[in-house]
Length: 84
Image (cartoon, rainbow, N blue to C red; front, top):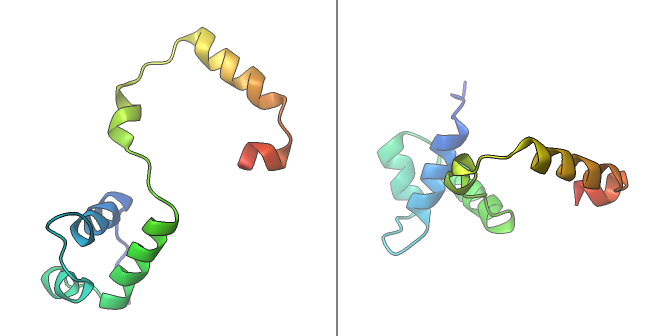
């Protein structure tokens, strides 16, 4: 049975697979007890859909007026436009 990993852990593993000091998926799997193909798949997904930098968003404080404006603008969009 596989062990569920948190999104934070998965994001950390992708960071280990990329950048200047990147390691291979095989090495990462050996060091963390996961499966190589899972790490490789996660890396491919991350390349197709880059994650948001949550640190930038956690600092921002929205005012009530800003929230209302965003909701009003969003309500004008169709479902397809909104999901894009």
